Length: 124
Image (cartoon, rainbow, N blue to C red; front, top):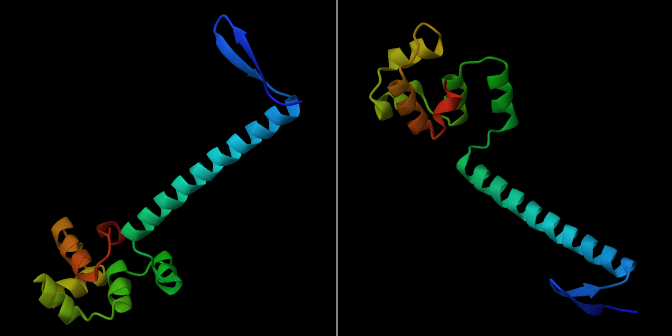
């Protein structure tokens, strides 16, 4: 059979067999799904490029409650002295933060996060 066109008071309409209509709807839904999937993948890739990806052993140490600065410093292979030099924060102060004797101010933690190249919220 095929598509048939008919004039109505509201304009011309297409009339097609149900099987063709269902196939058309399925194809449109598939295209919408593909477009939606493409948007999700693009968003995930953008987010991944902005976020830091941690190795499992680092994530495990953080999940086990180890001090985040120590764990991330070890992962980045940075000594307390190097971190002190790059941040202008005393090595003893960094040691005290890592051992829980002091808490870092937001500015202190931001400077440490910048040197370790990690988001600030990993240290909070």
